[in-house]
Image (tube, rainbow, N blue to C red; front, side, top):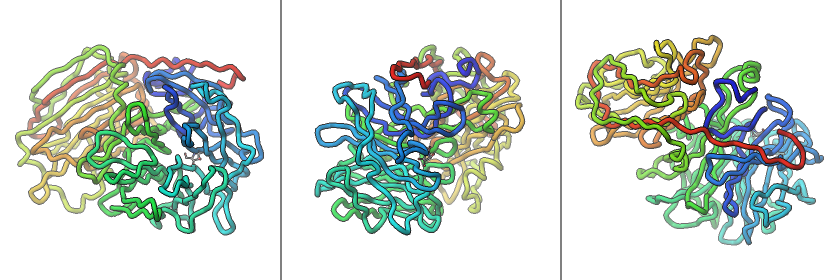
Length: 539
Ligand code: DQQ
């Protein structure tokens, strides 16, 4: 059974079996969180794509319901692909999704709940007007998909973006509608880029400046910036900018893949994400898809399914230059046994076991500081690619201040370990902090993807701690550096370091000592995920 194998997660969302990919149409309706996702009911590989549907009252424990949309109409016979939900006036939710008509033609379709008084929204009815958006001549119909949640302009018209490409370059087409059925394409895309390929799963939403809360997708508050996210090159990239609703003009602060500024939600395994505004807790929540990182056949052998992220809340940082992400607070209810300590010197070249918790299913928060910052190695100006730098300077390459961090899903003898660590460099009187996730020794098994990932992180180590939080869940390690300023999600498959044979360590492989200012680690309870299906038995 997939349930019995060691890589199945304990508190990350997952279907009971088979393939899942993108999260779709997340929303909060009448006290219930809804998550739909791309799902193959019949196999553990991509195909026969439906919208599976699960609900939760707390974003931790889930109930799987019947499949909401199946590809059984001419306008989606090749698959019910990604899309979003929008609340119409009066609070009625509606789904706008992509239908695969043939392998090289995609259209956009609508579906509505059958019974609005049912908070579980168990049945969905496709619109008789489908398809409601089709391509026009000259447009690439093969890459025309993934409509966003709609927002409303001051003229009352709803607007959505649809991912597309032109001459193999990504763009987000803008459509407007008064009744959500008849849509008119705007002459200009809202944004495009000649540096990228096709944009999958665009997302477009406001974030408030200096605000602690998320804002509704239609908010036109003055104190806001807009985020445009696009999925390409196996990553979710975003830009920040100013959106003027009257003209639908979006001017970006920095562009996709700008030199020295490639903003990403996550620097490893995180794709096809989508956000929604949670009106109950006034926050914007981000969902994404964590893929299995092994070959398909082994994926099928191992788990037969792929997992989704633990939801994160998302805010604009105080600098206004990037987003901050943090696991939603509900996850803290899963914390059980706790170990903690303060002010512990970690000598250069030492490893410290953190015992007393279930290391394979845990939540770890740690913060470091150093009184020897002036000894930090000089940053060579040619070291501009953080991933490359992490790959060259792995956890086993000593430096003056760093590498230091934690070793997770490690075997007792440390032959297996995934290390999440920092290095501090000096550059023109400033300090530069690098965060790395080194999977190269994550498993004794050969043939797995063990790529190393990294990011520069906007921390000033003179005036603040270098902090790290990692959610460790059997084969997923989601790490948040600097209180969510850089996130790296690793997917690893240790051979020895499974279940109670997995250990957790803090380490310092630098010449100089570092100080653990605080460490707080918890074992995590398993989430309850049950099925409640009535119409057919797809799961
Ligand atoms: N997955 C969906 C598409 C989307 C892609 C199909 C991204 O709609 O572009 O399953 O992972």
